[in-house]
Image (tube, rainbow, N blue to C red):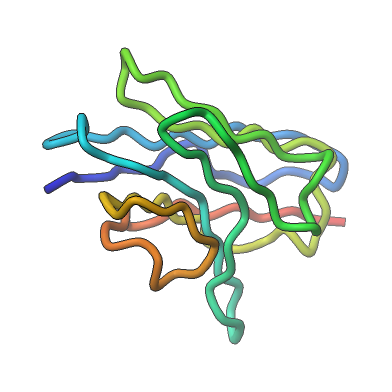
Length: 123
């Protein structure tokens, strides 16, 4: 199993930047895909970005060109660099991981989750 702990959330003004981190521990060697999701109050959890073991990435249309997902395998850490933040990016952000040999964009594609870190963007 793998344990995930997010950090780096906070409050910023529109146009600002934040970098989220997700520290993974446990059986990380066999992880196939990791991703970031977010959930705003009253809304469903949605995929933001994912990265496969081979480094391939996918992004939600709403964050393309503004967010960048990356991973440091030596540190077992996943990152999400968020630039040009907008009020609609306000949400709880979750790190997720899966051992399955696919890198989907839906919550049910991932079996392991962190507790989340709050991002608030004010206008």
